[in-house]
Image 1 (cartoon, rainbow, N blue to C red):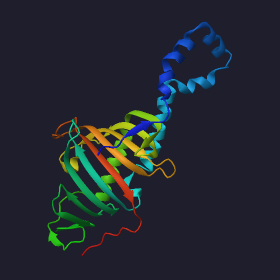
Image 2 (image 1 turned 90 degrees about the vertical axis):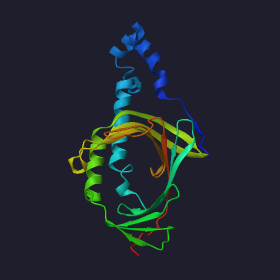
Image 3 (image 1 turned 30 degrees about the horizontal axis):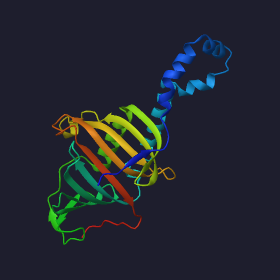
Image 4 (image 1 turned 60 degrees about the vertical axis):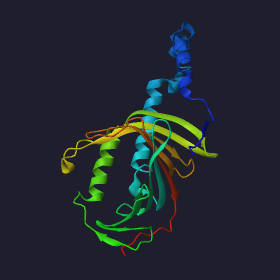
Length: 239
């Protein structure tokens, strides 16, 4: 069942047309020349957008960096444009490089520091699987995350809302990676909407849509919903 999201406050941007007309009026110009309404400028698009971009950049350096997250379980649901579930994945993550995951009811894959095993359940039993020839995960993540930070655009900061009866903070942005020679020049990107706990800034849900990339991204109207539950007791070890 899709989550119901109800806004608790109006966007500041709804006031922009009125602010523009007021500042263009004679009274607005007079007050502005006296410095009386300088504080109103924070509601104008340029300043508000810059503040929002700074806020999202700060989140990218901290709470949107998955290497800094505590252990968690996640459910990933891919929906078509009409809301149908096309695929689903379940993940258990102690930290990057130590994960257990399953895609659309298939076997589970255990990954520990570059070694892999497969099994019928999150508890195994595990059978050794071939290693994947890929760049070091830590280095690749750091490189791509820095690129996504640098390529942030079209940011929105709607503020507080309700998600399944829970208060959240919402941020919306587009970004992409740069072509990476280590993986044949491929790149990927899209638009995202993230829901954060207002107190801890932990990510509760991360939606991705309008996918783009150097290879086929499928239906760009599909949406990927990722929900997270944090559990400090999670441990992912080699069998």
